Length: 182
Length: 194
Image (cartoon, rainbow over all chains, first blue to last red; front, side, top):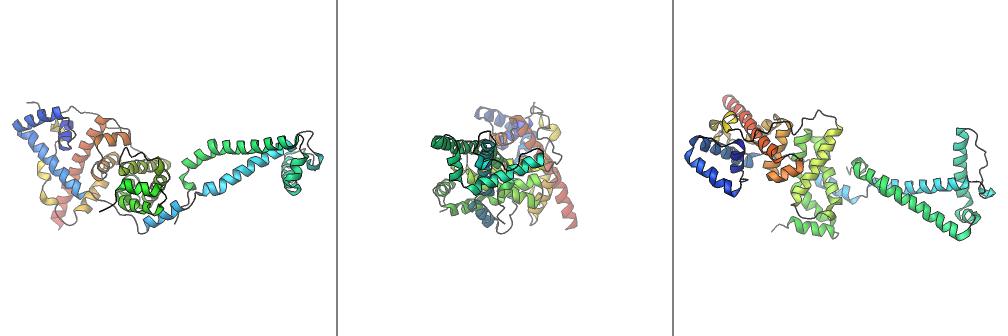
């Protein structure tokens, strides 16, 4: 007599057997004492594990910690998004300024020759722009209102793309950006 | 009468954030147990469980309700724990390492009937089972937890672990056999010492 396989035994005990196979298995069990003993043993172990399988306990205040964590906005969106937008606008500004023909009022005070000078130039130009004030800067830009609107739209667009395709996926991956809440 | 998970989820999505605490209370221990079976470290497991709950909260509006909330949450716990385990660079045993001898007759791996009896019934049973589970290989520990604690069906385990159905069935059987052997050894030893 061919005995039941591991899988048949498991499926029968776990009630995962197909209805047409159940009849076949039950017929075999009716005739085979060895398989019957196996099923009884498995059932006994199954009942035991269902009642005795240990559940571990989290430490006190676990729920409160989670509630604190979810009530806070992720650190990422609070800090990184504004920083990223600021950086994008700053870079676009600088690119436009360094273009030949930009207003002399916002031209760099230092002509860059070495890398250090370029960096100095970049920073000092950035400071210069903000000290002049945006309205003055925009009004000095050739093309008037249309150019200014295009400039702002371009800055926001790049910021949006940066956030959507680079920063947001990073945010999803890096769970460590979340505040721990404890 | 306790509020159902579905109702709680609706309330949370409608802005009653505090209701999420009820869901956390309801599932935290089982979710934590699953993470602990992976990570074997209380602190890491708790951190993984917390991450999983925060992710679940943020994704709650996308929860379709096709599976039970518990199953959905355990899947998140599973993924977070896997990521954490990989980042630890532990030597991971493949979940798919056993052969699929589905059609073998039961003789060679037969469960010893004598070992599965009422001798388990004493106060320290859970501690003994816990210790026995810890001695199992990772993939057996995990599959038993998913089946007995999280009460997942074969199909749900396949979906979560990405293992073929045959492998899940074989591993579950082998895990039971191995656990039963460890249990019978431990319990007979305890009986001698008690």
